[in-house]
Amino acid sequence: MQARSKAVYENCTVLDISGNLLFRTSRKRLDWYLSRDLATVVNDSTIQLKFANRGTGRSNEPFYLQDMRNACVVCGDTNGLTMHHVVPHQYRQYMSTDIKSRSSFDLLPVCLQCHDQYERHATLFKKHLEKCFQAPLEGRGWVERRDVGQAGRAAAALLGQHADKIPEERRAELRRTVQTVAEARASLFSDNARQCIETWQGEQLALSSDAHRNVLRELCSIEERVPGPDYCTHGEIVVGAVNQAQGGCAMCDECRALAGGGVPALVLAWRRHFVHNARPAHLPQHWAAEYPCTQQ
Image 1 (cartoon, rainbow, N blue to C red):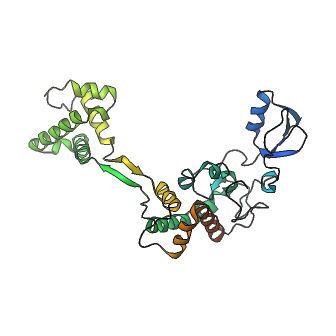
Image 2: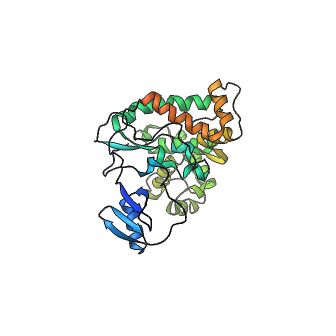
Image 3: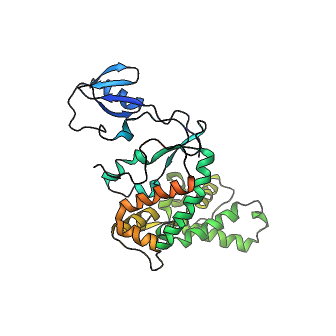
């Protein structure tokens, strides 16, 4: 992970048509309103809308109206900042829109050092959720293409530095493996490689041919294991299980309570985990783990 090259918070202000504070936002958002002649400039970082907005924005939520410090919420450092997802994106992306629309609450500036230290704890928590909700971290529903793997290894051997030392009988066997699989799996190759495969017509694979060697190189890079039609990610399984109050037989009491509380309980669990393990000493005012994850 790399540090951000610009400020995390730009603290720009949007006022409603009556001059009341609606919300804080980025410079890009200000420019969006101005480019469409929907607002007038009040000062360098403030605009006022020309139309009557339908809602009240964030006017009743102090957290969203304050100036935010561009400093690590853990140690207070202002250098090398990243934007940390308190509720990891791999879970939040499967939550309902009313929860995802408030994701900025759980995006906090954290320096690289503090981020790396906390991620060790986060990984352990993910492994705990993996066990309790029977949700493999690599996902569930992979398809093994063993023929592709076997052919890829054969291609690698034929391209290797010591290919000329392989007995001729074995090299012929490797060529046959490559050709058989390449012809059966031609759709996995690039257009140029596929054209080459289609013109073989029983011709022996020639290692002296650049076109044939290109087929070998592509075959080496084709994945043996791919997501199948029923593939689900770890995050999708966990969020789905929480929504349906399901879990594995080895579920701990904490996760059993989490499942009973639905997605808001999962959001709360990640917030509390961050607070307990990262021990942030510079959280913004009004930020609390128990803050509602949907608009009230």
